[in-house]
Amino acid sequence: MAAFFMKRALYNRAFYLMLVFGIVIAFLHIYQDATYFLDMVGEDRVLFTPYQSWIEFGLSSNYRYILLLLLPIISAISFSDTYAKDLQTGYLKAILSKGKMKAYFTGLYVTNFIVAGVTIAIPLLINLYLAFMMLPNIKPDPILDYNPLQYESTLFPNLYYQFPLLHTLFYILLAFIFAGMYATICLSVSLYVKNRFFIVVSAFIIDMFLAIILNMTQLYSWVPASFLTQLAAQPPVSLLAIVTIFLLGLGGSTYFYILGVKRRVIV
Image (cartoon, rainbow, N blue to C red; front, side):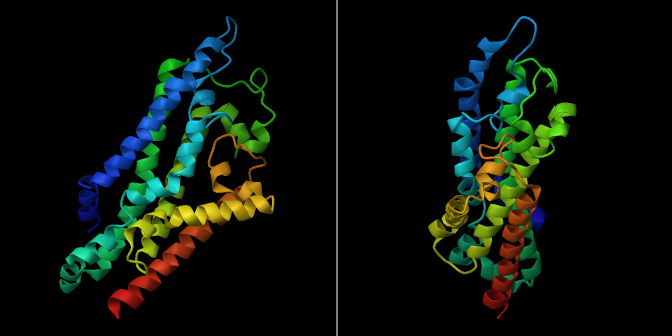
């Protein structure tokens, strides 16, 4: 059933729409922001490398803010309203009549998570690739390229200086799993709400409400839009905060998803 849902995702226009949107943002960032660094190459030392010019690094890119701000919506539109569509079209009844309820909801859950992650990971990988195409691949030096903010504004700063590409890929993976978390929240909402518009914006609303509360209480390190970047705008970054937000978001939405399946489908 998971393979069946993956095929449905590949034929889903919303998935490609969100993918194209992310890729456009990735290209615009390279064209308008990253190209600025080409004029900062010195004769003795390259001041800016791909690791310092891709979209998730740095503090000045508006495109990064747009991508992270809309991350919950991009993640949700890709596939999270599938259950609501199947319910409206009557396709769900045909599936349940064949006794494939468990396979349906398991496949839907897994596919929704993966599709959401892929939707954000591909634009980030493309953006990183374009940065490597433009700037020389020089490993950041802990002395010549020392950045005091790096030790407070990112996870595993020593990994950044020793294995910068691995550190960068880690943050792409982090965006992948949080996109999956947002999509899972929206999917769980779809079991309780029929309005498809509200379904796809539900995680965005929750994210904005959480950000407002956390900023008011000065718990900046707990704001997803801050810690999802490789160099957070509001340090320090807390691994505890990241793990807690993810587990609460994914665990809570998974609980309500299972509860919704039992109460609204089985009964």
